[in-house]
Amino acid sequence: MIVVAVAYWLWPYAGAYELAEAAAMHDAEALTQRINAPALKRSLARQIVSAYLKKSGRADKMGGWQRSLATSVGATLADPYLNQLLAPDALATLLAQGRIGQITIENRTVAIDRSVPTLQSIYAAHFIHVLFSSYFDGLASFRFSVPTERQGGEQDYGIHLRLSGLTWRLSGIDLPDDVLDRIASDAIAAEKRPSKEGT
Image 1 (spheres, one colour):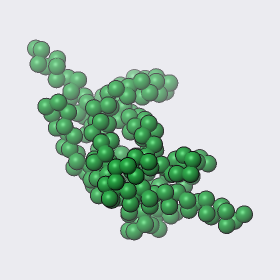
Image 2 (cartoon, helix red, strand yellow):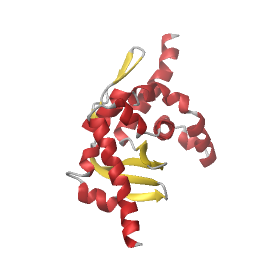
Image 3 (cartoon, one colour):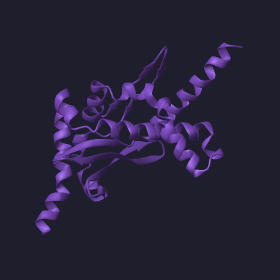
C-alpha cells in the first residue's frame, strides 16, 4: 500500500519531466498532448482579469460574488494577451527557457521580458524546495511550487498538472505578480486611449 502511495505521489514528477522534454525539443505534437488547453486558458484568464480588476480599483467596489462573476465573464479582456502567451513557440520558450517575452497587440507593445523557473529546474536547482512545497490539490491534480525572484523577495511560481486518462497535462501556470501587473496596466491604458483620441 505504501509503495502504491509513493508511486502515485511521484507520478506527476514523471509527467512534468515528459512535458519538459517536449518543450525543450519544441515538439509541438508532444507538447499539445501534454497540455490541457481549455484549463490552462481559463487559469491564465482568471489571473489576468483579477489583476485588471484590482489594478483598476473596480475590485474594491464589488462584492465577492460580483468579483467572481466578473472574473468568469471577463475572459474576452484577456484574449489578446492569451493568444500570444499560449502560442506554441511562446509556450515552449516559457516552459523550456523560462522566458516571457514582449506581447504586441495592434500597434502597442507590452514589454514583459521576465525570467521564470523552467520545468527542468524542478529536478535541478530547486528540487529540495519543490519536493517539500509541492502538493496534490485534488486526487487528480498536482501543484509544483518553484521559487522565483521578485522585487522585495521571492514568490512561489506555481505549475499545475491535471491527470487526464494516464497522462499528466499542464492545466495552469501561476504568473508572477509583476507580469500580471504589466498586463493589467496595459489593459487599463488601452481602455483610456480611445477617449483621449476622441477629444
